[in-house]
Image 1 (cartoon, rainbow over the protein chains, first blue to last red):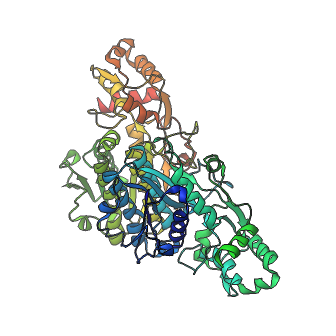
Image 2: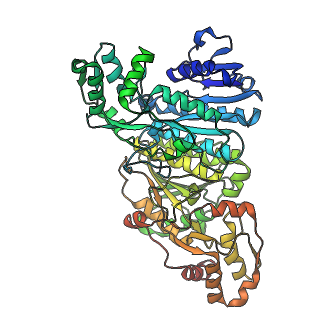
Image 3: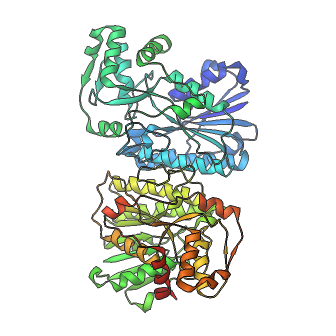
Length: 315
Length: 315
């Protein structure tokens, strides 16, 4: 099968690429990585084609998405704090570029599985304690707004048979390896990752803030599950809240201390940042996993296990 | 005050214009009607400026929306069955043109009250028996999808202070005077209006189908109430389900017979149309009016009164 990943040089894109290439039963013949910076092929795998492309000005997409394409993972996005500061750039990448990709699929290959990474940032405002499939989407951020608009568009395109779409709403991913980014949730990984590397980190929110998390490995496995699912009935709602677990910052720190000893907490300073807190606190702290688990998606067991995963796989 | 109405030559646009011009306490200095066909000034009122304009190619909008503009009623739309047949045209008018208007407001006058007519077509699929403010928007039509995308955009623009937006979700309007149109709900008025004019009409849905209705007069009064409301807090959700009432087709026919005698029902033939039925049956039959009534919006008393209103005002 031929698979395309946008945002292919990003953390998730690279990790997904590596995992896909390692799964022999998937029989990947070609994996196209697209990113605004030149992507790199994991392990120099010869099945990988790397394309540097600004999705605002996509040239030759209609030669990349063809009747041979099995699936597109559309991960490219302007992240939350960045889109909040620059809503117009966010609109161009997060919304218009998505529509453009969908249009190429519609013209060239309506059977393509279009897997779109949405976010719990589509939720906001007054929320029930536990989000369900029937909870209204009322984002309090530009990023969440743009993701929610894409969710609607992908559903309509799927209902009309223009594309075989599946939207997966990602929990906040923790612990991300690498560097902090412009996502409002960047601190969630920083306050674990930096101390584990012996570096300092700032926590810009209250210790009592509850977060809805998934480990990177679980998210990647769930992406691959979304690739393998049979097509959803066209009139069903094609948005799946990927499974996550709820944990407060205080508990995350306690778990970190339990794994590595209390002295590690010296690396964390608290410095409240209203902008970040406003965005992150507007996101749900808990979502009902029933539908996703029924569809065969997986969930992490607990946060301590997530820390141990990071130490094992990413350090 | 200066007010702009897009879709100004449509049924709602003309009726709103007439009503606004008659309200002396509003002190309308200029009323701009914009439509794709040359609009006409109600009663040749000299305060009315009529502009023929295709909103896909708006020329000179930045000279029309100025710091002197108090409000825009954005009513122009490609209606439901039409957007279902031609989703690309729907996207251009229902979504892109709305964004373009919002952008001109953001540049020229972010204080402008932007009143957007959305629709209960944003709802669809598996719905609770009574829709609430917290019910997820999962449209089963292209029209509903495009309206829902605009709702999100207007909320984000309002939160960011780019515009002072209020979205009103209209119930199905019954009884519309005039001719049938391409709305899937066109029959709802036809099965009352045509018989009252001694003409035949086709009912394409089951007699048991329940509809969520409002009379034209009530919708117009609620539009004017939306103009006069104080600005909503920026982080509130700026979408209001306008009040309506629930009635089934059978009851509408019984009420018609009660008002005009049973022989009037001879004018109605039943011819089931799956396409229309699928769209209309996916809309909610009942919505909780509490929030709207609390904000001072009004509701009709009953359907018989709506028939009598039509006979008095529109025949």
